[in-house]
Amino acid sequence: MQRAFLNRQPKVIWCSDEPAPPNVVAATRGWVFHTRRLSDPAADKPHDGLTVVYPNGQASDPAAMIRLLESLPATTGLCVFMLPRGESVAWSLINQDSGRCIGLDLATPAEQLAAKLETLARIEPMVRGLRSELAAAHHARAGAADAVASLNEEMQLAAKLQQDFLPQRLPEVPPAHFAALFSPASWLSGDIYDVTRLDERFIGFYVADAVGHGMPAALLTMFIKKALQTKRVSGNSYQIIPPDLSLRELNTSICQQNLSSCHFCTAIYAVLNTQTLQMTYCRAGHPEALLLGADGSIKILPCDGGLLGVFPDATFQARTVQLAAGDRVVFYSDGIEEALRTITAQPRLPMSDLLSPWAALPCDELIAELSTQIDAHAKASDDITVLGLEIRR
Image 1 (cartoon, helix red, strand yellow):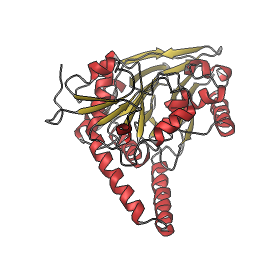
Image 2: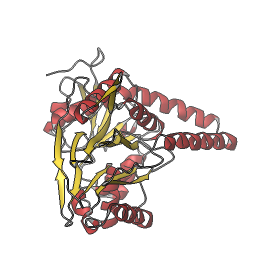
Image 3: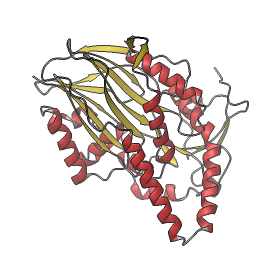
Image 4: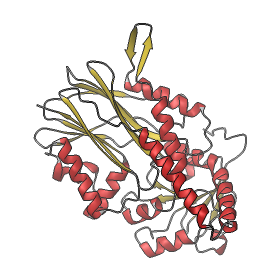
Protein backbone atom coordinates (compact mmCIF):
# COMPACT_ATOMS: atom_id res chain seq x y z
CA MET A 1 0.00 0.00 0.00
CA GLN A 2 1.45 3.37 -1.01
CA ARG A 3 1.39 6.03 1.70
CA ALA A 4 0.61 9.72 1.31
CA PHE A 5 3.84 11.70 1.64
CA LEU A 6 3.43 15.44 2.13
CA ASN A 7 1.60 15.72 -1.20
CA ARG A 8 4.69 14.79 -3.19
CA GLN A 9 6.62 11.69 -4.15
CA PRO A 10 9.67 11.12 -1.98
CA LYS A 11 12.98 10.51 -3.72
CA VAL A 12 15.69 8.04 -2.78
CA ILE A 13 19.19 7.73 -4.23
CA TRP A 14 20.48 4.16 -3.80
CA CYS A 15 24.29 4.43 -3.72
CA SER A 16 25.88 1.04 -4.21
CA ASP A 17 27.53 -1.17 -6.77
CA GLU A 18 24.93 -3.81 -5.94
CA PRO A 19 21.15 -3.77 -6.55
CA ALA A 20 18.83 -2.82 -3.71
CA PRO A 21 17.69 -5.85 -1.65
CA PRO A 22 13.98 -6.81 -1.65
CA ASN A 23 13.17 -5.11 1.70
CA VAL A 24 14.55 -1.77 0.46
CA VAL A 25 12.67 -2.10 -2.83
CA ALA A 26 9.43 -2.87 -1.00
CA ALA A 27 9.97 -0.07 1.56
CA THR A 28 10.42 2.55 -1.19
CA ARG A 29 7.62 1.39 -3.48
CA GLY A 30 6.00 4.50 -4.96
CA TRP A 31 9.12 6.60 -4.44
CA VAL A 32 11.20 8.20 -7.20
CA PHE A 33 14.10 5.75 -7.17
CA HIS A 34 17.55 6.61 -8.55
CA THR A 35 20.70 4.48 -8.41
CA ARG A 36 24.33 5.54 -8.39
CA ARG A 37 27.46 3.44 -8.20
CA LEU A 38 29.82 4.28 -5.39
CA SER A 39 32.61 4.40 -7.95
CA ASP A 40 30.72 7.05 -9.97
CA PRO A 41 32.22 10.53 -9.34
CA ALA A 42 28.71 11.99 -9.39
CA ALA A 43 27.92 9.99 -6.26
CA ASP A 44 29.87 12.39 -4.05
CA LYS A 45 28.03 15.53 -5.22
CA PRO A 46 25.05 17.02 -3.33
CA HIS A 47 21.64 16.01 -4.66
CA ASP A 48 17.99 16.34 -3.76
CA GLY A 49 16.65 13.23 -2.07
CA LEU A 50 17.38 10.78 0.71
CA THR A 51 20.75 9.13 0.16
CA VAL A 52 20.81 5.43 1.06
CA VAL A 53 24.24 3.79 0.94
CA TYR A 54 25.17 0.12 0.94
CA PRO A 55 28.98 -0.13 1.19
CA ASN A 56 29.35 -3.26 -0.98
CA GLY A 57 30.90 -5.48 1.65
CA GLN A 58 33.38 -2.81 2.76
CA ALA A 59 31.67 -2.32 6.13
CA SER A 60 34.35 -4.33 7.95
CA ASP A 61 37.19 -2.30 6.39
CA PRO A 62 37.81 0.84 8.53
CA ALA A 63 39.93 2.56 5.87
CA ALA A 64 37.31 2.00 3.16
CA MET A 65 34.51 3.24 5.42
CA ILE A 66 36.48 6.37 6.37
CA ARG A 67 37.13 7.14 2.69
CA LEU A 68 33.45 6.65 1.96
CA LEU A 69 32.39 8.99 4.78
CA GLU A 70 34.94 11.61 3.74
CA SER A 71 33.58 11.56 0.19
CA LEU A 72 30.22 12.86 1.41
CA PRO A 73 30.00 16.61 0.82
CA ALA A 74 29.53 18.87 3.84
CA THR A 75 26.18 20.09 2.51
CA THR A 76 24.66 16.60 2.33
CA GLY A 77 21.64 16.28 4.61
CA LEU A 78 20.91 12.85 6.05
CA CYS A 79 22.75 9.86 4.66
CA VAL A 80 21.40 6.42 5.58
CA PHE A 81 23.81 3.48 5.66
CA MET A 82 22.31 0.00 5.35
CA LEU A 83 24.64 -2.18 7.41
CA PRO A 84 24.73 -5.81 8.54
CA ARG A 85 24.02 -6.00 12.26
CA GLY A 86 27.39 -7.50 13.20
CA GLU A 87 29.65 -4.93 11.51
CA SER A 88 30.73 -3.10 14.68
CA VAL A 89 33.46 -1.09 12.94
CA ALA A 90 31.02 0.45 10.46
CA TRP A 91 28.38 1.11 13.13
CA SER A 92 30.97 2.86 15.32
CA LEU A 93 32.17 5.09 12.47
CA ILE A 94 28.60 6.00 11.52
CA ASN A 95 27.73 6.92 15.11
CA GLN A 96 30.75 9.23 15.28
CA ASP A 97 29.70 11.23 12.23
CA SER A 98 27.88 13.95 14.23
CA GLY A 99 24.40 12.75 13.38
CA ARG A 100 24.73 13.37 9.62
CA CYS A 101 24.86 9.63 8.94
CA ILE A 102 22.33 7.17 10.34
CA GLY A 103 22.79 3.41 10.37
CA LEU A 104 19.90 1.03 9.76
CA ASP A 105 20.00 -2.76 10.04
CA LEU A 106 20.14 -4.29 6.56
CA ALA A 107 17.75 -7.03 7.74
CA THR A 108 15.01 -4.61 8.91
CA PRO A 109 11.60 -5.85 7.67
CA ALA A 110 10.15 -3.81 4.82
CA GLU A 111 7.22 -2.37 6.80
CA GLN A 112 9.46 -1.10 9.62
CA LEU A 113 12.06 0.10 7.13
CA ALA A 114 9.40 2.05 5.22
CA ALA A 115 8.36 3.91 8.38
CA LYS A 116 11.95 4.82 9.21
CA LEU A 117 12.87 5.91 5.68
CA GLU A 118 9.69 7.99 5.32
CA THR A 119 10.44 9.78 8.58
CA LEU A 120 14.03 10.48 7.56
CA ALA A 121 12.98 11.67 4.10
CA ARG A 122 10.62 14.18 5.71
CA ILE A 123 13.40 15.89 7.64
CA GLU A 124 16.22 15.48 5.07
CA PRO A 125 15.58 18.76 3.17
CA MET A 126 15.61 20.75 6.41
CA VAL A 127 18.80 19.07 7.62
CA ARG A 128 20.46 19.70 4.24
CA GLY A 129 19.48 23.38 4.37
CA LEU A 130 20.72 23.78 7.93
CA ARG A 131 24.03 22.15 7.05
CA SER A 132 24.48 24.52 4.12
CA GLU A 133 23.75 27.49 6.35
CA LEU A 134 26.10 26.23 9.05
CA ALA A 135 28.85 25.60 6.51
CA ALA A 136 28.49 29.15 5.17
CA ALA A 137 28.40 30.62 8.68
CA HIS A 138 31.43 28.60 9.73
CA HIS A 139 33.36 29.82 6.69
CA ALA A 140 32.40 33.42 7.43
CA ARG A 141 33.47 33.15 11.07
CA ALA A 142 36.65 31.14 10.48
CA GLY A 143 39.17 31.98 13.15
CA ALA A 144 36.61 33.64 15.44
CA ALA A 145 37.70 32.08 18.73
CA ASP A 146 35.18 34.10 20.70
CA ALA A 147 32.30 32.54 18.74
CA VAL A 148 33.60 29.06 19.53
CA ALA A 149 33.94 29.90 23.21
CA SER A 150 30.40 31.27 23.27
CA LEU A 151 29.07 28.12 21.60
CA ASN A 152 30.85 25.90 24.12
CA GLU A 153 29.36 27.93 26.97
CA GLU A 154 25.87 27.60 25.51
CA MET A 155 26.34 23.85 25.09
CA GLN A 156 27.46 23.53 28.70
CA LEU A 157 24.38 25.43 29.86
CA ALA A 158 22.15 23.23 27.71
CA ALA A 159 23.81 20.11 29.14
CA LYS A 160 23.23 21.41 32.68
CA LEU A 161 19.56 22.02 31.86
CA GLN A 162 19.20 18.49 30.54
CA GLN A 163 20.87 17.08 33.67
CA ASP A 164 18.25 18.91 35.72
CA PHE A 165 15.58 16.83 34.00
CA LEU A 166 17.13 13.62 35.34
CA PRO A 167 16.21 12.34 38.80
CA GLN A 168 18.49 13.91 41.41
CA ARG A 169 17.80 11.01 43.76
CA LEU A 170 16.29 7.61 43.01
CA PRO A 171 13.34 6.79 45.27
CA GLU A 172 13.59 3.91 47.75
CA VAL A 173 10.43 1.88 48.29
CA PRO A 174 11.50 -1.39 49.95
CA PRO A 175 12.06 -4.00 48.78
CA ALA A 176 12.68 -2.15 45.48
CA HIS A 177 16.10 -0.57 45.00
CA PHE A 178 17.28 1.33 41.89
CA ALA A 179 20.69 2.22 40.44
CA ALA A 180 21.52 4.06 37.22
CA LEU A 181 24.37 4.77 34.82
CA PHE A 182 24.09 7.81 32.56
CA SER A 183 26.99 8.63 30.23
CA PRO A 184 26.38 11.03 27.31
CA ALA A 185 28.67 10.69 24.29
CA SER A 186 28.98 14.50 24.06
CA TRP A 187 27.62 17.61 25.78
CA LEU A 188 24.00 16.65 25.17
CA SER A 189 22.34 13.24 25.30
CA GLY A 190 19.54 11.66 23.34
CA ASP A 191 18.83 9.36 26.32
CA ILE A 192 16.68 10.02 29.36
CA TYR A 193 15.48 7.93 32.30
CA ASP A 194 13.31 8.45 35.35
CA VAL A 195 12.01 6.64 38.42
CA THR A 196 8.83 7.98 40.04
CA ARG A 197 7.00 6.88 43.16
CA LEU A 198 3.36 6.83 42.05
CA ASP A 199 1.85 6.07 45.48
CA GLU A 200 2.54 3.90 48.53
CA ARG A 201 2.64 0.71 46.46
CA PHE A 202 3.51 1.56 42.87
CA ILE A 203 6.70 2.82 41.22
CA GLY A 204 6.98 3.82 37.56
CA PHE A 205 10.31 3.84 35.74
CA TYR A 206 11.50 4.16 32.14
CA VAL A 207 14.39 4.63 29.73
CA ALA A 208 13.91 6.50 26.44
CA ASP A 209 16.25 7.11 23.52
CA ALA A 210 15.65 9.84 20.92
CA VAL A 211 16.93 8.83 17.49
CA GLY A 212 19.78 11.13 16.47
CA HIS A 213 22.27 13.30 18.32
CA GLY A 214 22.88 16.80 19.59
CA MET A 215 20.38 19.50 20.42
CA PRO A 216 17.31 18.10 18.56
CA ALA A 217 17.60 14.75 20.35
CA ALA A 218 18.18 16.43 23.71
CA LEU A 219 15.13 18.65 23.27
CA LEU A 220 13.00 15.63 22.46
CA THR A 221 14.12 13.92 25.69
CA MET A 222 12.93 16.95 27.66
CA PHE A 223 9.60 16.79 25.85
CA ILE A 224 9.31 13.09 26.73
CA LYS A 225 9.94 13.88 30.40
CA LYS A 226 6.99 16.28 30.44
CA ALA A 227 4.67 14.40 28.08
CA LEU A 228 4.82 10.88 29.56
CA GLN A 229 1.76 10.61 31.78
CA THR A 230 2.00 8.10 34.63
CA LYS A 231 -0.93 9.09 36.84
CA ARG A 232 -4.24 10.83 36.18
CA VAL A 233 -5.73 12.88 39.06
CA SER A 234 -9.45 13.64 39.26
CA GLY A 235 -10.66 15.55 42.31
CA ASN A 236 -9.65 13.62 45.41
CA SER A 237 -8.89 10.40 43.54
CA TYR A 238 -6.31 9.28 41.03
CA GLN A 239 -5.68 6.50 38.54
CA ILE A 240 -2.30 4.99 37.74
CA ILE A 241 -2.02 4.83 33.96
CA PRO A 242 -0.99 1.40 32.61
CA PRO A 243 2.33 1.40 30.70
CA ASP A 244 0.75 0.54 27.34
CA LEU A 245 -1.66 3.48 27.62
CA SER A 246 1.14 5.80 28.79
CA LEU A 247 3.22 4.98 25.70
CA ARG A 248 0.20 5.25 23.41
CA GLU A 249 -0.58 8.75 24.72
CA LEU A 250 3.09 9.74 24.51
CA ASN A 251 3.21 8.55 20.91
CA THR A 252 0.13 10.65 20.09
CA SER A 253 1.68 13.71 21.75
CA ILE A 254 4.92 13.37 19.76
CA CYS A 255 3.05 12.91 16.47
CA GLN A 256 0.84 15.93 17.16
CA GLN A 257 3.88 18.19 17.55
CA ASN A 258 4.74 17.79 13.83
CA LEU A 259 8.40 18.08 14.73
CA SER A 260 10.66 18.99 11.83
CA SER A 261 13.65 16.98 13.05
CA CYS A 262 14.43 14.11 15.42
CA HIS A 263 10.76 13.31 15.89
CA PHE A 264 10.86 9.66 16.76
CA CYS A 265 12.30 7.72 19.66
CA THR A 266 12.28 4.43 21.53
CA ALA A 267 11.19 3.80 25.12
CA ILE A 268 10.51 1.10 27.68
CA TYR A 269 8.27 1.84 30.67
CA ALA A 270 7.25 -0.30 33.63
CA VAL A 271 5.12 -0.08 36.76
CA LEU A 272 6.10 -2.19 39.78
CA ASN A 273 3.72 -3.20 42.57
CA THR A 274 6.07 -3.28 45.56
CA GLN A 275 3.66 -5.46 47.57
CA THR A 276 2.94 -8.23 45.07
CA LEU A 277 6.25 -7.72 43.14
CA GLN A 278 4.37 -7.87 39.86
CA MET A 279 5.93 -5.69 37.18
CA THR A 280 3.90 -4.60 34.15
CA TYR A 281 6.03 -3.31 31.31
CA CYS A 282 5.68 -2.04 27.75
CA ARG A 283 8.23 -1.49 24.99
CA ALA A 284 8.23 0.90 22.01
CA GLY A 285 11.04 -0.02 19.62
CA HIS A 286 13.51 -0.14 22.53
CA PRO A 287 16.01 -2.90 23.41
CA GLU A 288 14.29 -5.64 25.38
CA ALA A 289 14.69 -5.63 29.15
CA LEU A 290 16.70 -8.33 30.91
CA LEU A 291 15.66 -10.23 34.03
CA LEU A 292 18.64 -11.39 36.09
CA GLY A 293 17.62 -14.14 38.48
CA ALA A 294 18.96 -14.55 41.99
CA ASP A 295 20.97 -17.54 40.71
CA GLY A 296 22.71 -15.45 38.02
CA SER A 297 20.50 -16.63 35.17
CA ILE A 298 19.51 -14.14 32.46
CA LYS A 299 16.12 -14.01 30.78
CA ILE A 300 15.00 -11.66 28.02
CA LEU A 301 11.62 -10.01 28.72
CA PRO A 302 9.92 -10.00 25.29
CA CYS A 303 7.35 -7.40 24.34
CA ASP A 304 6.23 -6.09 20.94
CA GLY A 305 5.99 -2.40 20.07
CA GLY A 306 7.10 -0.03 17.30
CA LEU A 307 8.87 3.34 17.41
CA LEU A 308 7.24 6.37 19.03
CA GLY A 309 6.42 9.33 16.81
CA VAL A 310 5.83 7.46 13.54
CA PHE A 311 2.16 6.41 13.42
CA PRO A 312 -0.35 8.47 15.47
CA ASP A 313 -2.74 5.54 15.97
CA ALA A 314 -0.09 3.00 17.00
CA THR A 315 -0.90 0.68 19.90
CA PHE A 316 1.48 -1.04 22.29
CA GLN A 317 1.44 -4.36 24.11
CA ALA A 318 1.84 -4.65 27.88
CA ARG A 319 3.13 -7.74 29.67
CA THR A 320 3.41 -8.67 33.34
CA VAL A 321 6.18 -10.62 35.05
CA GLN A 322 6.32 -11.91 38.63
CA LEU A 323 9.51 -10.90 40.39
CA ALA A 324 11.02 -12.43 43.52
CA ALA A 325 13.63 -11.53 46.13
CA GLY A 326 17.08 -11.37 44.56
CA ASP A 327 15.80 -10.63 41.05
CA ARG A 328 17.20 -7.69 39.11
CA VAL A 329 15.69 -6.03 36.03
CA VAL A 330 17.90 -4.08 33.63
CA PHE A 331 16.66 -1.41 31.21
CA TYR A 332 19.27 0.07 28.88
CA SER A 333 19.83 2.10 25.72
CA ASP A 334 21.68 0.56 22.77
CA GLY A 335 24.84 2.59 23.50
CA ILE A 336 25.89 0.22 26.30
CA GLU A 337 25.43 -2.77 24.00
CA GLU A 338 27.78 -1.29 21.38
CA ALA A 339 30.31 -0.27 24.06
CA LEU A 340 30.44 -3.78 25.55
CA ARG A 341 30.79 -5.31 22.10
CA THR A 342 33.77 -3.05 21.47
CA ILE A 343 35.33 -3.95 24.83
CA THR A 344 34.90 -7.70 24.31
CA ALA A 345 35.69 -7.59 20.56
CA GLN A 346 32.54 -9.69 20.09
CA PRO A 347 30.44 -7.69 17.59
CA ARG A 348 27.67 -10.28 17.34
CA LEU A 349 27.06 -11.09 21.00
CA PRO A 350 23.59 -10.15 22.32
CA MET A 351 23.29 -8.03 25.45
CA SER A 352 22.34 -11.07 27.54
CA ASP A 353 25.72 -12.69 26.81
CA LEU A 354 27.64 -9.43 27.17
CA LEU A 355 26.18 -8.94 30.65
CA SER A 356 26.70 -12.53 31.82
CA PRO A 357 30.09 -11.98 33.60
CA TRP A 358 28.35 -9.71 36.11
CA ALA A 359 24.88 -11.28 36.16
CA ALA A 360 25.14 -12.40 39.79
CA LEU A 361 26.17 -8.99 41.16
CA PRO A 362 23.83 -6.80 43.23
CA CYS A 363 22.43 -3.88 41.29
CA ASP A 364 24.80 -1.22 42.66
CA GLU A 365 27.86 -3.38 41.96
CA LEU A 366 26.61 -4.24 38.48
CA ILE A 367 26.22 -0.56 37.57
CA ALA A 368 29.61 0.28 39.10
CA GLU A 369 31.30 -2.52 37.14
CA LEU A 370 29.75 -1.39 33.86
CA SER A 371 30.88 2.17 34.56
CA THR A 372 34.43 0.98 35.28
CA GLN A 373 34.56 -1.09 32.10
CA ILE A 374 33.39 1.82 29.96
CA ASP A 375 35.75 4.34 31.55
CA ALA A 376 38.73 2.01 31.20
CA HIS A 377 38.22 0.47 27.79
CA ALA A 378 35.56 2.13 25.63
CA LYS A 379 35.46 5.40 23.78
CA ALA A 380 31.77 6.25 23.80
CA SER A 381 30.35 6.79 20.33
CA ASP A 382 26.75 6.79 21.52
CA ASP A 383 24.90 7.83 24.65
CA ILE A 384 24.86 5.16 27.36
CA THR A 385 22.07 4.66 29.90
CA VAL A 386 21.48 1.68 32.18
CA LEU A 387 18.72 1.58 34.79
CA GLY A 388 18.65 -1.34 37.22
CA LEU A 389 15.93 -2.51 39.61
CA GLU A 390 16.79 -4.93 42.42
CA ILE A 391 14.29 -6.73 44.64
CA ARG A 392 16.23 -6.88 47.88
CA ARG A 393 15.85 -9.79 50.24
